Image (cartoon, rainbow, N blue to C red; front, side, top):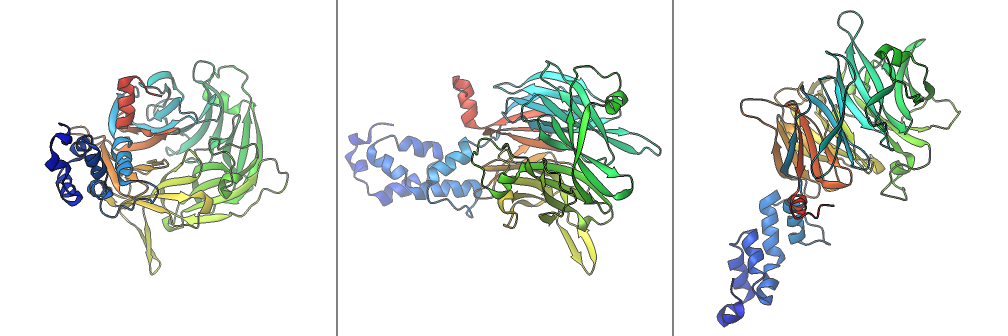
Length: 475
């Protein structure tokens, strides 16, 4: 565009006229017009123009914070959101059930119906590092999680056992710092769906039913000792005496299945952590977050919060510090340990009759104040039936929420406006591929990874990150 100083009539145009003309331009042409001269640059930055673009993007209910401009908000939504497919990997040969990043974001772990656990190296292009079939077909693995030091994984396995095709759960520890995936410890899980979680680099949380009180369940801190030897069979690994246990909590399960467990430091619960970059403090005061699925009354499903001291010698029987009734379809913890995000279906009760709503919503709960109103996303996004995506795991970052709200489609929402930014498709022609889990990079919310029933891992990045890769400036 020529310098507008060569055209005095244009330079002398009043602001209202220029605003009217500029309102017909798209984002790219408006940005180009702003480079013509100082006057056009000033008018092109008018908030009303960029506000209109933002409303076109996320709807007129959007409310911009006072300390940011509409142009910067639109740039965040368009340029910094992870909505562009960057890479597709297929190394699993059956459905992938779960995906997670390590704390640093340098590693990714996946697991699936093929009974295999895989560890990937994250970079400009994801590369497969290790792969291990940890149980035999038709067993499968539905959960993996890195410890803080990124030296071990826990994996939750489901295996047929006993009579009448009953299933058993196994929590397994895999070493990854020796250059390969090597199982080093395992424990049977009487509460089959219970996936466990890490309490420390060498200690995981396990659940066991008391023999003399089948309605009571105890939670064990299991410290393992890696002697460096390979196990000859899974049973040998389970019976090996290389795990030291300590009961940290005992509760009455009241005919409920334990499904999910998350652990945060007590300081994070109170919101007084001194270092936002490190969510793991030296204290052993923890909050155990447990989801209990009532086997007979869905409207009695609960998310319970317990305060425990791993060093305490006091009685471990405890009452929850908070209880939330919720029908949870998948639960995740934010990287900063300040939010829980879950998929859920509302339960309505009328005259002692209850029913589960068909629509799936995604809920973000602030852990510093669970009394506050949760953030709600994706209302009126129905699944095909109330039984689909029973174990679908959403995720939350500082600015975005990602979850499946329709089969094969990942909804990406903006947390400021709570409006949909994009719909990312896993759909292949002629196929239906339910998405299983999503995860934001813990240090870079402009990166999102997703897995689905099509055996594929997909990496989504923002335009900003893709431009950085193209110019060789990727951090």
